[in-house]
Length: 407
Image 1 (cartoon, rainbow, N blue to C red):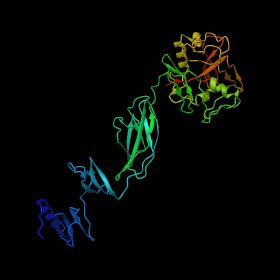
Image 2: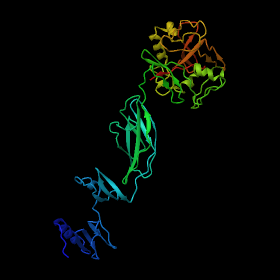
Image 3: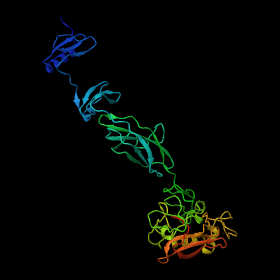
Image 4: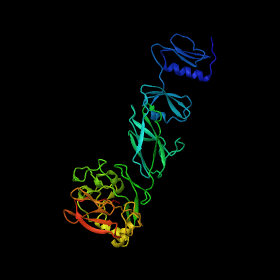
């Protein structure tokens, strides 16, 4: 029986005959049948291929070759030899129909770290099967907008990544996707993390990262001082006054009368060597000696103490401007005390060489980083009866208060 054929169908028949000589090709009005039986194509198929010994081959190409196809049609199908996947094109993207491998598991994003005023560090766990990761960072919890260059950013095969160029004191949100040659996982959970505020001496507090204690700060001239005495020990508690502080890689403190509450109020008391963390004396301005101070802070040298009192009009009047006013901690008469500059010097007393404690409420003593000899070092003294700051030397074995200056 004669079957009416369009020109295009005739061309297709000729092409298929040329390439499939082992089969009988039948072109009917309802479709094209390729088989060895002579059966016609089923009504619902434009091409009906039947075989029990051979298969059909899709066009095979790499991802790079696929990506240069000009204006791919909706539903275009290929076999991708890069990903080992059957793929089809739909709405601007290529999608897997079947693969010999699988996309990686969803990664677990974990808390951020290393925040500064302009940077955060994003972190996540390794995802099984992943070869690289894509990172989104946004100032919007819904990811309605993205930090520049951090929309689906390929960060490579890492599990931590620094995000820079951020705004200070701002909350950011991040999520990550694991990827391999087979595809991408879904999004991880969203992590919230913030940059820090701009640090301003006198307004911002110092947080000691070692124990999370906070200290007020004060700007006096060009110097930024702690406005409280240091209260730190590696163990979190004190050693008794009869015990010497040892060079044992563990910072130790005394509390007046072996009472922790006195450390809370007045700060710890430290022997000179312990305060210096057993490093050499310094006469420099700045001293360059961190000692037992927090990171980015240092022990003031004798010259730095002198710079402070000179700025305040000299030793004879500086004490009143530095001492806490009133009698909450200082004994009467607390001469000249105004705390004019906010230094809030307190009378923490000292630890004697025999392990006893003396003069709390009446005197405050602060070490410098500068020694006078192998056993003697310079310090400053303020007391309740006078308006002055006294520059003196004493034995390094005594336990005095410590103030730190910002680098």
